[in-house]
Length: 178
Image 1 (cartoon, rainbow, N blue to C red):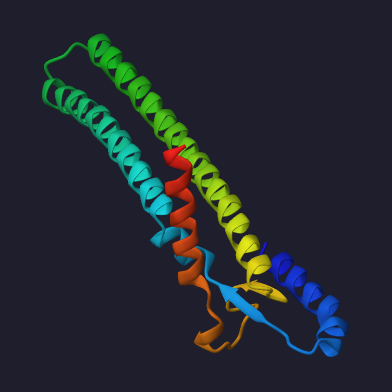
Image 2 (cartoon, rainbow, N blue to C red):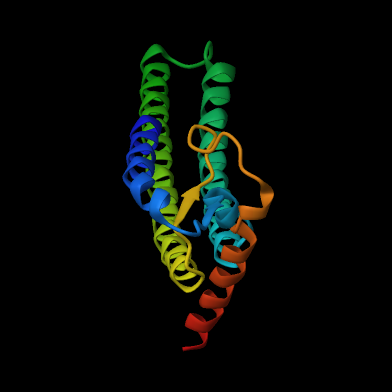
């Protein structure tokens, strides 16, 4: 993915070389999308929501794990006193519950990864719209995403991340008022 992203921006850069050479004034900026996600109001709200869901899932998994541990302790304590058939039955029950727990844990993990990806995708889509508006309004020639493989060095003066966060927060407030 990083290689594809790098190739895309490299191609984009080379595509703009003739334009840049002929232009009287070139206006280039970059934005740190990750920072916008982490510091914007919507990003913070999304993180809070995800943290709440993760906490809820952890509590549920923890209670299931405690239940498993109690069953295992019961089998261990009563092991010698139980008849072989009863011990085998309890062991089967424990194994079934353990397998159910592991399946539930995997299911939750997959669900959370999917939700996180959806949240990020929606946030990035909205952020890209804000970046595009800023680019059009302020007549930027090109706005790049801050990434070490793409931008090796840039002066902080062309970083518009704070401006994007401010515009994104403003847009979010306006859309919630409607």
